[in-house]
Image (tube, rainbow, N blue to C red):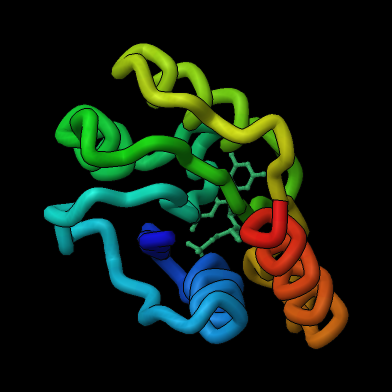
Length: 136
Ligand SMILES: Cc1cc2nc3c(=O)[nH]c(=O)nc-3n(C[C@H](O)[C@H](O)[C@H](O)COP(=O)(O)O)c2cc1C
C-alpha cells in the first residue's frame, strides 16, 4: 500500500499532525508544494482555515490531483471553525476522488488561543487515527 502525507501550514500547527501521521505510517510528511507523482492508495491531506477558508494553495493542490490518488483522508486544525473537512471533501469529490468519512480535527494555537495545541494528547490521538485508517 502506498501512503503519502501532504500538508499546508502557515504557523506550524498542521505540520505537527502531519509529522505524527508520517511517523506512524512510516513515510515522510511533505508540504503541498511537492506533487503526488506515484500511484497512491491513501493520501493524508492536512489543512486549516484562515478567514473561514482553506488556503487557495490547498485548492490548487487538490485541483492538480488525478486518478493516481485512490482516497484522501483529511486532517486539520483550526482555532474555532471545524470546516476544513467539508471544504476539502467538496473540492476532492469534484475531482472524482473519494474522501474517507473519518477525519481528524483538533484545535490549533492562534495568538493567545489554544496555547500549545496541538499538544501531546492530540499527537497520540492523530497517530491512533492514522493507524486505524491504514489497518482498515
Ligand atoms: C491569518 C489567519 C486567519 C485565521 N482565521 C481563522 C478562522 O477564520 N477560523 C478559525 O477557526 N481559525 C482561524 N485561524 C486559526 C488557524 O486556523 C489555526 O491557528 C490553525 O491551527 C493554523 O494552522 P497552521 O499553523 O497549520 O497554519 C486563523 C489563523 C491565521 C494565521
